[in-house]
Length: 366
Image (cartoon, rainbow, N blue to C red; front, top):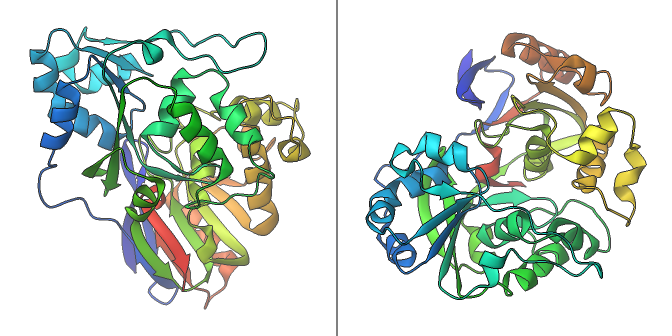
């Protein structure tokens, strides 16, 4: 028996698979040395405002490394999408982190930038890179747009001719985000490359191909089963994040194969669209329509497509009334039960691949 630990919220869950069933295992390892942050410190020292775009552990690790410089620069403002979470993780910044009210859309539908984005002075944005089925990859530019430019998500979705998931490809949605980010005055973008739940490196104003190529490369033979870890705390907080993470890795699963998605979802479903789907206010077909006025509508399509192409089940904390009853995803409350069901479905000789941290990997079928 092979024992594997997969991130699950703030902890890890033990997954045990018999040797005859175990296929390939991809388990990203954290960097062996401390993060080199001097370049990022130089960028932030020149900034009047530092924007923290997410609260993923690698982003917070970089921010922790920069905290001494931030504290010593009294004039620097720190703005975050979730200020309390930032201050809780980095006590040195207690009382220094603010939030911004969401920008109100204009009557003509044109995007509205938060005033701090268009004001003079240097600005630095920090976020962690993630594969994404709509943008190809999420980086500091994309995250800045989603947090502080009104209607950025719907504009990016509308820019695409379809909503087919295409992780790691520079999509029309990314182009739209890139265009919107160009409207931010004097901006510097710092994108953190994650590895093993840690910050491995920091990319300064990287082009799309550099971000896409920074993920851990993994080539695996297709298998009947796939255990996919959505990444743990920060990554698997919502079903929304977990579904988006899955599309970067399911290419190594055979058609109609069984996917076990490991995601705690402690914060629930995540997007307005998934909540509407779970409560019967949106149909699965709504995600295919071009009139995507509801935040996260493309995720309804991604979830439906996962269920159409694969046999999906979850190890999750989501209530059964939503996951199984409303969304049609069988769930398990323990890893032993989940793996038992998985092995029953792949058969005695079926192989199961394991990705402990899917959002850190660029996975391709060999």
